[in-house]
Image (cartoon, rainbow, N blue to C red; front, top):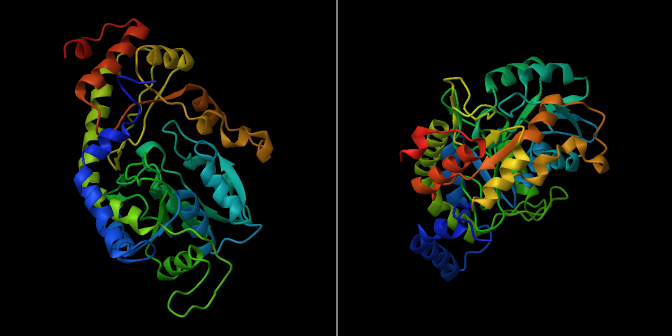
Length: 378
């Protein structure tokens, strides 16, 4: 189905950088640089500088980034790792793949880890906390860092939704022992396929992740140091990502502009909760524009009928702990469960035009029967 307002527009995104992307790919191919060559190292160095860390290691996915960071951070089978249920299964899967037991806590109204719930979840077997910076907003890293230090816990940040987001002037990914990013095509910085990245200031952890991604081998000596994995970010993807990276600040500004326009046009609607939260220490990048309403399913159908493509990812509609096969349903997470029934992602990407945004605003006002003069006057 073709939408007047698509959730993402991959073709328009490609066209905006077409010649640069094709030149980068061609150069890599003509050099024969396909795996573990200069393009990868250049991208890793650029990402480390962008986030504000000393090291970055490219891997095959955001899931592997979290998995390897946990292993390299010393997490052992039987350890407990605290995280959230509201979000993609990938975070919890990475914990399980590392041999640890996920301990799930509730979220706050901004969809991020409720810091007031973390301390109560800590036991003698707790070794790490994995905060998930969801929808482009940082968790409260001041409170989380204090809790982790008090209990001598490792912090591995899942920043897959939040490249460029800040807390107290620092970018997410730079607070914990490691920060993990997904480079999936529709993330803030997306490859033309799967990809992931671990950033860190810990030299040992960076080396361990580098070993884990490449069969467990030391590339310089050929010595096998552990049973590793095949999880390398390939050179062509790295070359394409290096082209895109300088555009990220511009894309963030556009996302923030779109979010402000949505807020301006939708803020007067009763019963509609918008993703704008207090706190001068936060800089949100709006990876997703997550509205909430008790009439979510009706609104979803209405928007589709009016040629708008909203999103309610199945991986989030049912929280991780409510999937029976995972056997994590021994917990009650009331805020997580409520948000899962209410949330809806509106289209938000740099390629959206103001006319498309205003169409979304007008349709939502039409659904609620409100007369929003701001939206109708544009």
